[in-house]
Image (cartoon, rainbow, N blue to C red):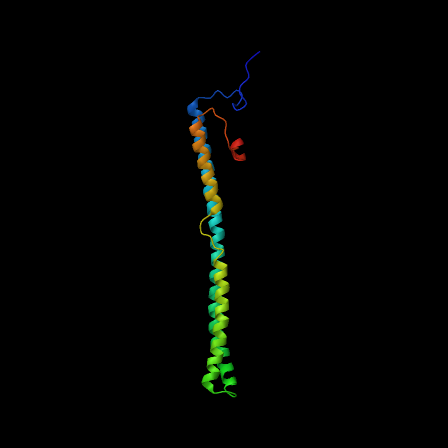
Length: 154
């Protein structure tokens, strides 16, 4: 009866250690390449959020400016029929200032969800680095603590 290989050793894989390390190196490179691609995707999504928030700020500024010019004069002159003109213009100006403040706060709220650092990719890369360090410290024949990604299984 032949002695059985421990369960952590692949059956029949008698490749040289250099070849195994070469394979591991290629696999780590592939993994890191995929992690960088994930980071790019996350960053692109966050930039889209920032663009939308910037567009809201721009729209708020344009709407506020046009509204201030057109409606402020009309409302102030209309109100000037009942109260002194200076007081009428002050009241209308304050009204539009409040409206502009509300729009600016909505834009700020949108920016609060903006994260320029791709968190998922950073965490995943950190896990990969820790797993690689643990694997190297255990040696080539020690069992892995973290399961290999599906892409490594061929």
